[in-house]
Amino acid sequence: MSTILIFGAGKSATFLIDYLADSCVGGGRQLLVADLDPTLAASKLQGRMNTQAVAVKLEEQDSRRKLIDQADVVISMLPAGLHPVVAADCLKLGKHFFTASYESEALRGMRLDIEAKGLLFLNECGLDPGIDHMSALKIIHEAKAKGEVIRSFTSYCGGLLAPQSEDNPWKYKFTWNPRNVVLAGQGTSKYLDHGEIKIVPYHQLFKRVETVNFPDLGEFDGYPNRDSLSYQHIYGLEGVATLLRGTLRRAGFCKAWDVLVQLGLTDDSSQLQLPAGSTYRQFVNTFLPWSDDFSVEEKLSELIPDLDFSTFEKLQWLGLFESNPLPVTEGSPAQLLQAILEEQWALQPTDRDLIVMQHQFEIQTQTGIKKIISSLVDIGQDAVYTAMAKNVGLPLAMAVDLFLKGEFSLRGLQLPVVPELYLPILKALEKEGIRFEERVVN
Image (tube, rainbow, N blue to C red; front, side, top):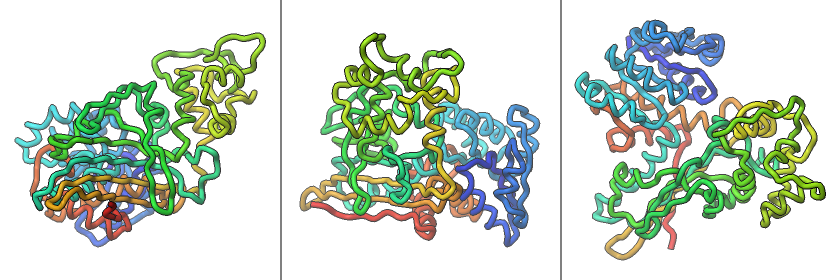
């Protein structure tokens, strides 16, 4: 009997656990779900046959390895910093390892040993990264097989709210790690535009926005991710003229978020200790010059000359000009802002989220340039069975399922960027309603 071990039973693991737990019902497999809170794991398993919730002390090597030693395949749904720890245990004990997270330098350092032991360590098999790789490379490889050349490739992805749940001016709530949202884009973004390398520093990022349109959904802001250039090699696009990967938010979001950036509210490099009882308004005023004559709103308007009504409305809706006490008064500005947003952008039980992804290609064919737009739209059921959890968890679950069925012969440190891996996963995803609509545009 094959044993699957999942570390982590959080929000993003819901569909992953369901899919693999269901695969155990017929026998031949068992599933262990390990979490700091075993009652949470048990609630996800719902008593299904051949499944078990177990407690784990992640900081204790013996606790981790005792569980890993029972497994054939280990899945890490833990914070990214813990993946190398679990992966190192898997390598020592000779267990296959799967994650939805980015392949790290620590994992790359294990490459030779992974290959020597004949193990499969598959990373980046979630939504972004994951479905983005698989869906894009299917088109890229099909074009190359015809002798065609990719001239331009742009790709955007976003986790947002379904239209029926857009009940605030930002049209946004947290469906993923709040800290990652608050710190998004920090550093330098790099991409190719018509053969030229473009650099966008953080303080300019949310001004460098492209409009991305989805039929029936309208317009979105798309801003560049940190490093698009590395995907030239991963995607085999060394000769491409334009290459950009970006993030999607609803139209108008980026202009309002840029105000928070310009103020310094997203800074995570310094620490604040505000007086007990400090208010939202005082927090904002901390980042504005002193004045005996002008209000916080007036000082903000002077600092941000293009502050329009729509942008001001978004800031006002967050309560930033109110005298409500801050949830926390100590931490970095980004941590204080995160605490505010976690209250204001909390997903309500009946809210439905939205996943949108779009690839835009310009392909040189024998008859000229062909433009292809490939789009994914998926709406969640509620605040538990979210589209985010579905699109992150199912590709990973399906990869493990296919691996245990003997569908993959590949071993070593891998990403889902080769047909042997991505074709059967994409086919399985389509059966679950996760499919791309392709259209050729003039």
